[in-house]
Image 1 (tube, one colour):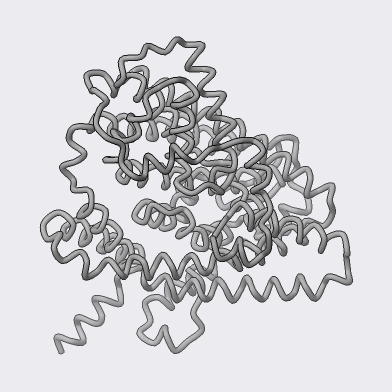
Image 2 (cartoon, helix red, strand yellow):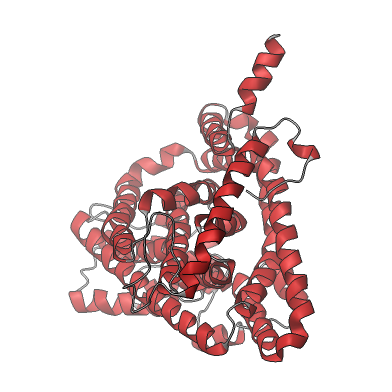
Amino acid sequence: MRMRIMVRFLKRISLTQWIFIGLVGGFLMGVFTPQFVPIIKPFRDLFLQGIKCIIAPLIFSTIVTGIAGAGSFKQLGLMGARTLIYFEVVTTLALAVGLAAVNLLQPGSGLHIGGSLPEAAVKAAATKMSFGGFVEHLLPTNIADAVVRGDVLQIVILSTLFAFSVLAVGERARPMVALCESLADIMFKFTGFIMYLAPLGVGAALATSLAEHGWQVIVPLLKLVGSLYLALGAFLVFVLYPVCRLFKIPVIPFVRHVKDAVILAFATTSSESAYPMALAQLERFGVPRRISSFVLPMGYSFNLDGSTLYLAVASVFVAQAAGVQLTLSQQLLMMVTLMLTTKGVAAVPRASIVVLSGTLVAFNLPIEGVALILGVDAFMDMARTAVNLLGNCLATAVVARCEGIVLPGVQSAAGVLGTSAGPASAKMAPEYMSNMALDHELDALWNNTEVLTRELPYV
């Protein structure tokens, strides 16, 4: 009898609640029993590796189907132009918010830079970023090389070029489009299986971070961590929220759909780990796959709002800690440098550290400042990764609105950047109703004890 009651209770716990339970358990283990963390650490790697093996085929299949579904190069080019303009405007605002926050809060005042450089900082400083090197890195030597290394930027560009070719071939490429549609559906189902490891994976990830770095390391640099979190909060309130209002994106339904993916990105400090879930949830929110599969992967390379804001804060923080007074013109020049160097940084290992190191060297600031930041970087990485993903999900919804798509809670798409509620919005109503029905089906399946014997929906 007790066993039956326990089973009923466990069945009522949703995946989101299990993830929260995993986070709390990971925090408690990392703080109070760090000696047991090595036992569960392999589950973090197992979960992340399971997600990473999905990324390449999922990006390829969804980009091909998304671009092929655009219908024409003219329509695709207009959507791409809107996407890039939005990316540039929002990342510039992220830099402005970071610059204002670090000058107002002065987190580096009273600190002193010194000591030897850790190995990660030495490697980052040795990594040279140049325009020529960036261009050479855009395409891989072969497809397998990009997939093995998990290079998101190369995979996105390669998939986009392939999709352009499919679109140019036309009707003869229809079998390839059908194959990619089937592959995308299969990868979403595969994601559903992997997501059952999410509670254990995120708990192990948080416990490992706390055990390796210790929560005590935050205390001397608490002002820096707090300044970053406040700046990110201000960015959400004063930039992303007004964007929602401007483009008539319903905030509560949007947050309800993407919250699980954002929590996953926060806990694992990996945007890639949340990509499959974010893509699926955006489709359930009402964004057509042809838009989400085009905009979201591009955002992973060109719309890193959280990382961009972090770099603005970290660069000026090092100058403050070193006692260097940067003039307004110098800080603006630094922001322009960061605006250019952060584009496509997903292609560079230890991207944020590399960009930060390059910026410090370019402005004659002590590279030892990286050593000061690395101690708390894991805790700041959680927040900036979550904001990166949230910003990309919002960018996808914004482009959908610009394309005339009616999202839940929006009566008409008219008046958004000159678009009108024409055929695109008319087609959206049955698609959204289908997604709502799928939501109820997913909830029922998740709470069913025989879920593993039935067709597993993507999460």
